[in-house]
Length: 45
View 1 (tube, rainbow, N blue to C red):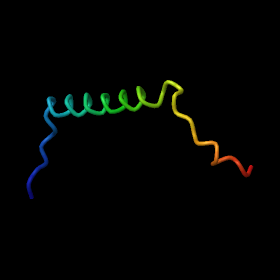
View 2 (view 1 turned 90 degrees about the vertical axis):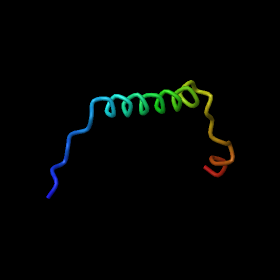
View 3 (view 1 turned 120 degrees about the vertical axis):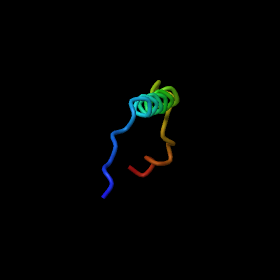
């Protein structure tokens, strides 16, 4: 059975930067209060 090698530090760094960029982009699009739900969703309540 082959031993599993640990992930390289560069791969971990790039992955962390990628996830940070995705989270930052989502926050930039939706985190500033510009996202509103349509009014028709709550009409009957």
